[in-house]
Image 1 (cartoon, rainbow, N blue to C red):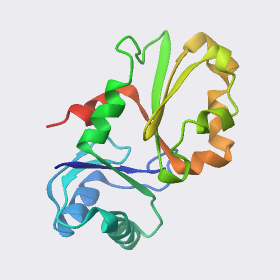
Image 2: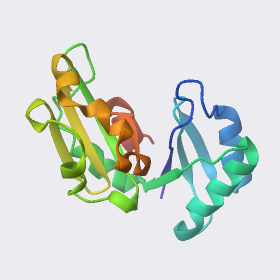
Image 3: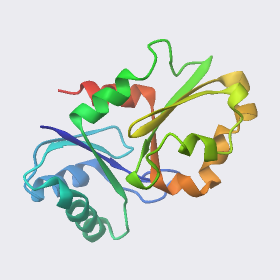
Amino acid sequence: MKYIALLRGINVGGNKKVDMKTLKNTFESLGFTDVSTYINSGNIIFNPSKKLDKLNEIIEKSLQKEFGFEIKVLIKTENEMKVIAKAIPKEWKNDSEQKSDVAYLFKDIDSKNTINELPIKKEFIDIRYVKGAIIWNVKRKDYNKSHINKIIGHKSYIFMTVRNINTARYLAEHK
């Protein structure tokens, strides 16, 4: 079974720079196989060689040692990623008209109630919960009105890692 590790907050705005080749090598040095990375935002697909209950701890400690700063890691199974991607309506896109994203949730906030806590204006955004994630679609003309950008300052934000739907779909279908 393949797993996908989603690194939170790396290579954003020039902060917490992580080289993808070094990241891949770090995962391989842990004994993981079939390791590949996808784009520069910290998506790693791999086959583990250790029990899942220790994966986060092992990976986070290794990344801290390799890169010199803390990196939170969310691990999803291939099946979990597929369920989340299937929940994204086919008509949702990232284009000049609309913006669609997936906020993968750490277990601390993995609940449909999380949506109600976010500082958004629901009349301007289609936002949905699926186990393990919140997905949303907003018309670009309504982006600022939706207040979706205000989630960055919200207390729940540290317990999520956001990817656009193109990335979400790719990671779910990667072979």
